[in-house]
Image 1: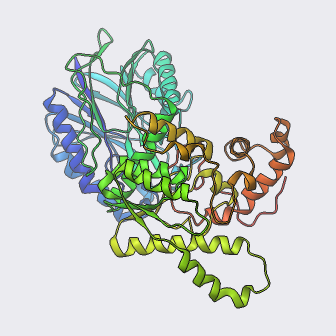
Image 2 (image 1 turned 180 degrees about the horizontal axis):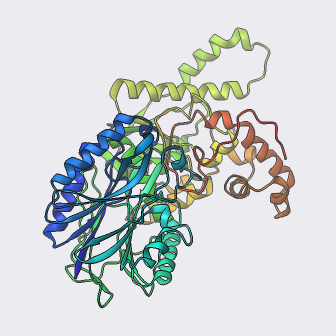
Image 3 (image 1 turned 120 degrees about the vertical axis):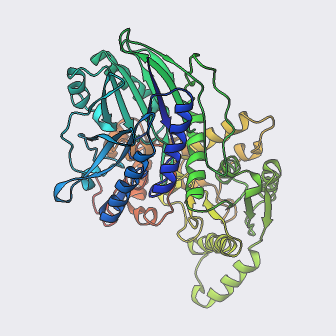
Length: 563
């Protein structure tokens, strides 16, 4: 029996020393539990994606030095881990190293380099050429890297034809809603096609706008799911394989060795020899956990332990406040209410009730006097002109200044609260409500915001978000009687148009043909196109859809195409 551990870890980009310690820590724990082979994710040593760090020759050299140092400490167990390899002519490779007996035993290079969506691997890496076959304890193993198993008839088939008894895929596959099911279907197909065991280990954690959800798994040659790690948590998943009988069974408990100062409380897994298959999450829970992990890791990995946000009594800020409390704990979250003359008593009370429910500190800083001072200062220049968008945006920018002043004075990361629907059509204010360090729900459409808010309420003994927030017509409250849908149209209709245009890249004509109101379609698309300049200046935020604003979406700012 070959005893294998899949180490689903949370690496930090560029933290070569920290990532090395984590690999050694997990390898030691796996060895203690009887593992003979421990497998780590793609680029586990340097973190994924390292982006333009790869253009620094000294970074690549230092990552190779870290691998050399790591290998000297791996003796009585074999480890497979991702790193960056270098070759002749300055070429570099996305690589997997096999280490054991105090040295590097084998190195294999990724052959299929993704270059779509958030991936830019052809910008950095050269194509690998070697077969990726290694032997561990007499078992022939095919090692491939992420995309190598996604492309039909590519690397994995070559390895199976070469006699691989196990296919091991090391991966750093970013999260998007529903992707775990897609991965599992793919791996089941590969296992059946090659008649081999497929072992897949994915990284977990947040890196800037990306979240990696883990979900490492083992598939039998007949396509049965043997084991699956939980999503959004570090795990050590153990299994024992008999290559002669082709029998594979989970072995040993699942461990979490998280080094985050905000650890998730994990349940103890089943004991040795018992099956461990983490349940699939429904979409709302999956997305919510992705937002919590992405926000937590962005703050933690960049040195923040406290966060603050503006709360308005609206649903967006209420959801972000919940995410912040789940990510950092209530004692590390500060809410700031900044009422203006246009804020209703109901929304002010809801902001107070939300803070009370979440047990977070609430600071109320009215902006009426500051706003009046602005208007008085600008009066000579605004004379005889009707009040409008300029006055509305002044309020938003006052609030942005207050938030940043609090961050400068007391430290902490400011979380912005704008959603994807607003960001898409420019219903947001530069240097106002867009001010902050991380945009938690920038990839969450407004209709999904309500769904997530209801989900969060459903898992608490008492609702955290006041019901009045969920039933009140959403409003920026920058003038009397204002509502969002009066300006934008019903969110249900707006979001369907936005999804079709942004994620489906559909034409206006196709969207109209699907039954949407023609006037609303053309108006919405015009707003999306003309507000790209705002989105380029927005903070980073968690990606949860197939086309998030950022690397997924690269619309020219200067753009006259209107078809």
